[in-house]
Image (cartoon, one colour):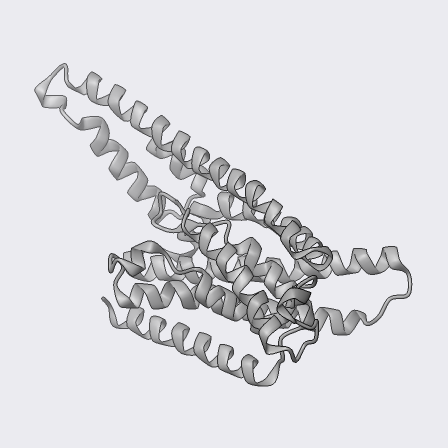
Length: 298
């Protein structure tokens, strides 16, 4: 591990820990995170009800844990997960403090528990989600504070939706930046190249923002109704997986055909693969787009 990568990990983890502690001490969790219709548990819907807040955070943490268990691995070494949607929903309900704790606890993977991920990798994975969730929550609070109360119900709902999209976009963008920076420092590739290689799938994840907003709205009506959105989240994850899988199958098919052609003569053995490797390396040095890199590889 390079000194630069060590400094980056230390800085990211320290910033994430400081942000979580600061928001926990200075910004109370919003009352929206407290689930209603829990009279049997004697939970009162108040922002200072620690039991209700704990139940609400635990609820969204469990959903995030389930979604985090099914990441989609990208060719550049990063992974995407639909767990961002419940994190954003918790942010909309409880603010940056709730989002930070849900992100910190909810992105735990089974690989980490089995010891398959180095300790510093676990720290980076959690910090790279927790810090964007907190910053997105702070941006959301700023936008809501700037807009102020709206008398018109339709305009109020519209502005609430737009502010949710803004906050979610900040979360997605920062998560992409931190994950790409980790890959770039680890592999030595330019940061812009790493970002572009997975940008198509990451930008598609922006569609999770409306879904997170709907989950939040349903939670305010009946907390159990937000569980209905687990199925759309899972189908979204399946679509991402199919996209990556089809691309890999296509590449493997072309590789098999090229090897079959090269196999005619021992002097041309692996010629196509060597040309492909050199072409892609030249493309990376020239900083071509991800689509052009795919074309060069094929």
